[in-house]
Image (cartoon, rainbow, N blue to C red; front, side):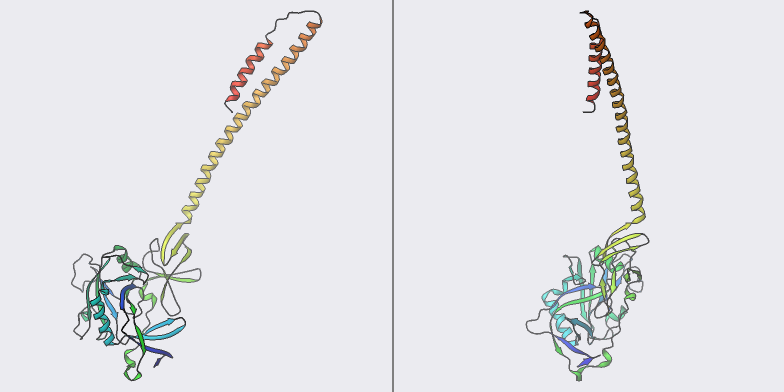
Length: 341
């Protein structure tokens, strides 16, 4: 049969099908039934004042149409009450009820999440009703305890809002005679019902719950209303944020960065200034010694000329201190120049 022009299929379990492989904590679950988390902020429930880090929510809802788009093939699938009972029993028997992931991508480490209860609603006296969860008879519920503080922070602050099963199963075309239209109302969950904060950057609207800082979880909304983890770089209030797979990994304050860059330049300028000052001082000293050397050369030439004149007159002995003075100046100059080698 068809619904809204698309084929509708029942999920079924064949001989070689694995069934439910794990349960994932996700944003905007396909079954659109968010879980509740219990702590001191929910006084209508009987819990201690300390956070228990417990969650309860539906994992499979009977006759709830779930939209799928696989390789461009768009269709709906749904769980019947019978297949929910079969899948639930199989995951309990085979131990997959205790396997968890986050966003269908990241496996939860051992003891990161403990399953406390798994049951199927059989009447309106079900405990789920006491918790204020309004789902039909035949719904499978799960209660878990979150031990991993990182996952618990994502539940409270980053939009993890429900359970989604990872399924290996088959589908068969739904029999229209058994299909009850009134039980398949599709109520689209608004992404802003899950994420309390929104900003527009680079023409894209980003949604998040916690403060916009390192560790915040950011999503955009796809055409079919699903949350998509955001990857990119943007600037808000002179702070540059860099996010990968929805998680803000860097937040750099441009104002502080500019001040730091200016300070670094000032430090470098001071060092260069000191270096130039030293070079100028050395240059002045060299010029002074060069002038002294020229003076000695002039004196030497004058003494040499006077000696030649005396020699021409037949005087064989002259007394002069020129050689010793030149030697002394040369030694002083040599020692002084060594400091620049």
